[in-house]
Image (cartoon, rainbow, N blue to C red; front, side):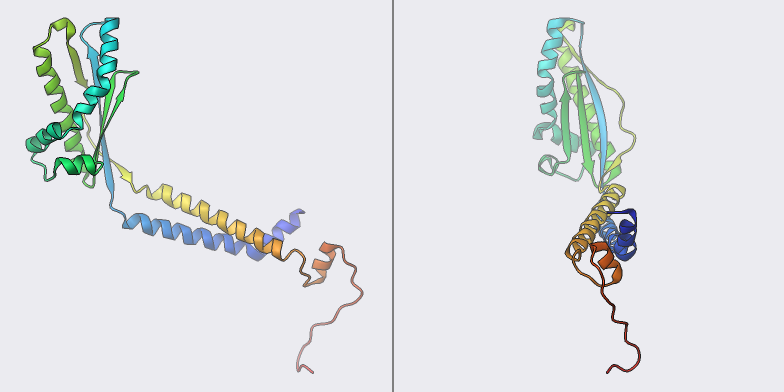
Length: 223
């Protein structure tokens, strides 16, 4: 189509695209505001062998996932709950998808993530988990030869929690894009259905049909 055809379509049906985009933006914004805000706090632990030995480093790398798995146990998390006097249970933390642990073998780190509706609780809990894990490893090291110890250090304690969900801005932007796409598809479908409909001399010119005559529009009393 020529440029003037696109301009004609935008003038006639552009409001459909704008309307659907506005509706989806409003819907996603309202949906996001009705959701409970979940906050996320993170702490990274560094796990290092006591000496720069290739064999010991490989051993630490192999045990990293096992060490991280010790955190997501009822025994360990019950200690955290008792220490901080939290109003929750280990089932809530594990089955409710509150505590997440990921071992990064490449750089010998364990990433701990806690998600909670309260940003203060998320920060408190993730720091408590990191400190208790370090304390247990330090006690374990006391019974080991110094050359065979595995040191755990907290890179930096969590100071704040960021919003994990809902991502209102992202949801609104995505809703606007989806609405605009749906509106565009509807406009093209309407144009395709009306491609062969003749309503004016312009439509005849567009279709390449020669007009033999024209009936003038009636005005006043119809006969």
